[in-house]
Length: 347
Ligand code: SAH
Image (cartoon, rainbow, N blue to C red; front, side):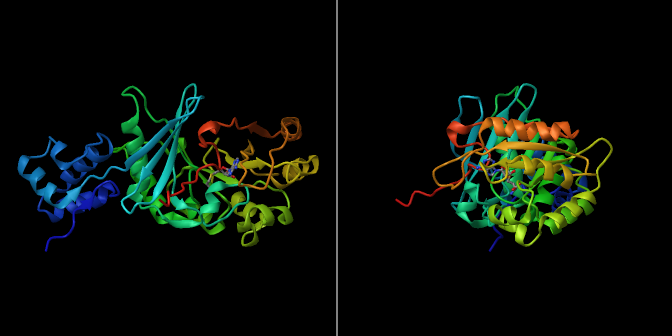
């Protein structure tokens, strides 16, 4: 019995070199195949026309180049596009494309669902179904790029879709390595941001890796009492421990950490919170992203009134901090922050 064909999308350059070597080919053929899969987005070995016919035939018997199956695309009035992909085992994930003046950001998922149960996030209501494989993480970027107009190009990637990336570290690390490989899609790590709810050992692993992507930390509270309530992960890694880990995170010159802060009415949006936030972040090179809460009937909180968000921002500004208010994108198609949730038709 022959082995079932292996998917090439989740394989690193080195793995493909080894694979081709095992087929009796020189290692550089592995690099060519990597380029075909990742840079030229070939959909099958037959399409790799710089390889000999016989090698293409051999590869076709043994490997596949999987594409995530696009089940649905929705376009918001602001141009944001949301894609629903069906995975091989029938699970679904969502990815979002966010066009801006000079960029096109792909927001991708790292898990099916999420185990962290933040009170303000719809994905959390799903619980964790499973981790995504490296090929499914890379596959979102390939499938999104395929779905674009020929002249459009993804400029930035944010790991801010479904899931907690640091709970799927090995696959995320591998996927980011593939996406940044200069023979592949060749993304600069500076244009990739990994967002975490505050998984301290994961942040330490990221710091020790050579990924050099940007780190965003979803803080969203200034006391442990409140953060314990809205982000249960805080009970395991409270604010002081999280921030001391952030202080140790190695930052290349002129780079900054980001802190995300979802603004919840009367929960974390008071003047005292802003003042405490200033004190907590003392000595950390960072910018703060205030995120207006995207409310839905399934979530208990209400959004902070706009004047309160602006007053909060002003306190940060007056203390010399960079703080932006993230404009909500894709709200009308539930593509905005925290709104990704996939419900299976039970029919
Ligand atoms: N698990 C990671 C990645 C998800 S990113 C993390 O927590 O960072 C999703 C971002 O959207 C996080 O900053 C999160 O705090 C924010 N978010 C979640 N639900 C939201 C909601 N309903 N409205 C606005 N922002 C939300």
